[in-house]
Image (cartoon, rainbow, N blue to C red):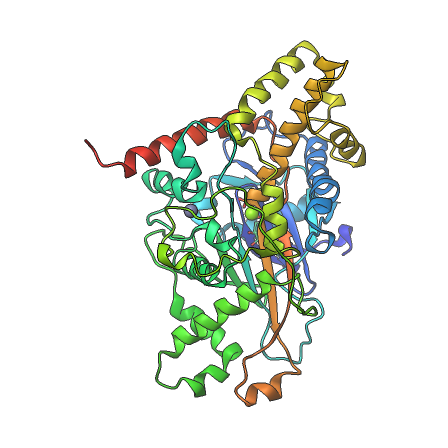
Length: 472
Ligand code: ATP
Ligand code: ZN
Ligand code: MG
Ligand code: MG
């Protein structure tokens, strides 16, 4: 990519989240991720080009030096900061505007700094042979928090029984964010039990909200509808998937082939999620039981009496085990973290220069990791009690932020049909896929977000209790 010869006609709208907008290159397997700002931000509250550059560099460093070692090298692509011609960015912003979903238009793309993040396009498989007429299928899942909090600081008992996602659904429905409740429960997806994972994925397909997207050849073919009242078209999805599961047609003629295709598709996703990350490994992987807490959420629609049929835990190397392990670094819960945050705040008020030394707002480089690593993981009551104790507090806050990032990331699984298996497929065997798994959206969560998280937690729990407890 020649940065001085950028042409907006080589790029197209790809997607966006709350913080960034992504465009993909028409020929190369590349995307550009550009920051977004609230549209009401005026010129003087906007980041300067210098600040925007710093911001994106922090995103890259955080992914590279903090998240990657915690999650595993092969799953994480940190990308690189690029300086783009302003003219290109402005033209691009005009070009993509009409493609953007209405619910995302409260923010505008950054057209002032010229900074962006260049990443591989993970919806494509770079080594996929173009001979096959079936382009890669990519499933993007935003799994959210996969465990029930176990901290002794928790004050509301329901937090130990019902997961955050399920509680949050009621709050979001009441606030008009979504029109229908999702029946997806992250604890089912993270359970490692094929049955429960199957149910979780089926529920995601029925109500994807912003937790599921499906791409074909890099094009979005399935996601939540812009108009939240409209149901996503499962039938359209089945038509897209049919050529990949062609053996099903003959075998189940007349027996709801659509349903069979969806079931097989879900099974393929399940096996990828339970694998060691790529299709070239085999053997029975070692399982881990990560959760110290109750492994089932009371709000999940999964039938209670089937729970005993094997809760197998996740294979140690699986992408979900890696993510869950990092999520669980949040061992105090926001209720335990908030008082610590206030102490850090108090300390920083007294010693403002410490903010830089403790690298609260980055840079998240190698020396940041040293700072974090040198914090004692436990309150050892040493001679330098005050200092030691304080380091313990900041360490907890760092850990909490890392866990927050892992609760908000997405998993991308990109499949391509195995060509060698073409013949076997004619023998009506199950189709085989080559796949690759990545984790994306590993941005640092701002330290200042902690008070907001604390208030939100209270609101969600209170709302859940009010809406589910029958009036006296
Ligand atoms: P969120 O609101 O979830 O925090 P965000 O604003 O941080 O989102 P991303 O999740 O990084 O933004 O990107 C938005 C969307 O763009 C993703 O959901 C994904 O569909 C797409 N995307 C991002 N990075 C890539 C990539 N490297 N390859 C392909 N698609 C990508
Ligand atoms: Zn749940
Ligand atoms: Mg995202
Ligand atoms: Mg994000």
